[in-house]
Image (cartoon, rainbow, N blue to C red; front, side):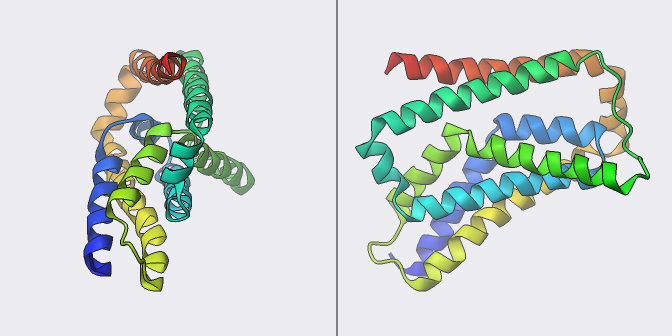
Length: 212
């Protein structure tokens, strides 16, 4: 397989994984309808940084590590599941709370909020076993037998760009006036739904780990 074909094949596989619904989409969608676009985009960049990291370790043999050390995948499921349950509970607790002000002129407050959003995106991506397995499988199946330097240099930034582009589209689509107004009108119900989805995904991961 040529380098160009391998790059496009992996890009297609990663794009399919990114677009498929999951905790990252729930987080971006919820953030987009109540926070500033700047803060939501920082969350997106955190997710994209996580994708870059997974691409890097996939190039170093993530698939082989998960196969050789099954306990690593088991722990990833358990801790990832617990983290999603924690996020879900946090959303539930804030369901009936008033929204934070998004037009705060205090630059320091905005910087803190943006930093928290970035770290939330990064932590959510890195704790997601689905992302780890998807990257590991895609690279194991589609990586050339003898990767060139260009392959190593192109693929991690490409993984970053795929996540960043998709979730930027989601951000701009859901931060428009109609989705924002709809969310404000039904905030408690929608937060309970989002939090419930997070907790169900987390509980599913933990139960899958216990079955192994």
